[in-house]
Length: 385
Image (cartoon, rainbow, N blue to C red; front, side):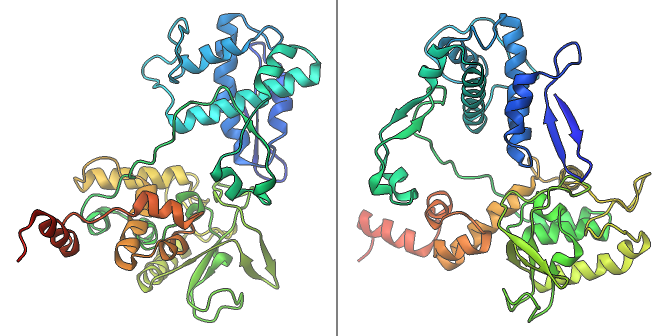
């Protein structure tokens, strides 16, 4: 796989053959997703599959649905058939449920693109272009869902009803312990901002100073309290990009749109401490919020991977169990807000989640030590007079 830096900023991905030439079919397929994070994900999935095909001596013209199912079994799917020699050997691990879904979507799209474009392998095209009856969830998500007659299906996708497990929360006392162990005002600001908002690490690392409206009555008029706008910018120098991509615009130097997150007084305090000390010492011309404070790239934008590494090292120094990951802060805040409010819609708005139903399913668990839970159980047991 080859990463390409575009002249206007941002990155593209393609796949090369063993002799260094471009794999035309893979390159054409990946170009369909130019400018999106899907291109990177599909590039990683596709290069792994093409290596497997080279070992199995398969081409797109000769590949069958059974071959694709064998590959899915080799990377971790539960397929009731022999799939040959092991493929993902240690230290590589089998794909998880989410990665298997992504790989299945990538393979279906790739082979339909190649076989349709070349007019070959009609048997595989027919096997992949199957339909299914729409479910109740499909109808509720679709506009004019009552008119749906069929939905596209993927025979490579893992079977079974998807289950939602409870996400991993932060260990007890994570924020104060991390704040004691971080070494810079920038790191302390990152810990505070992740703790007090449901911001993703890609969105935080991609913030520009113009995205911060840290006073009441900002000119954008979209939130009267202090807030930030998380805007998806494909050409960020540190390649940090927001996962969700709502429309945003700049008018007369004022940002509007994007994902809006309220900020706390503690976040504003940490921000000014960082800006007036470390940021001004390494004046940056790129306008991004988080910068590197040491090394040959001092003053350049700080990457999301560097922030993850800082959290991991600070957690290790603090003696916290497990690995401290940025998404755990998002899960913890959503869980805490739902516990306090009891309203999934409030938790949805705080975390900018896609639906209140998802928040209720994942985070709406009862507190086993609450007075209401104890009273209900004792009443059933007959221990109350």
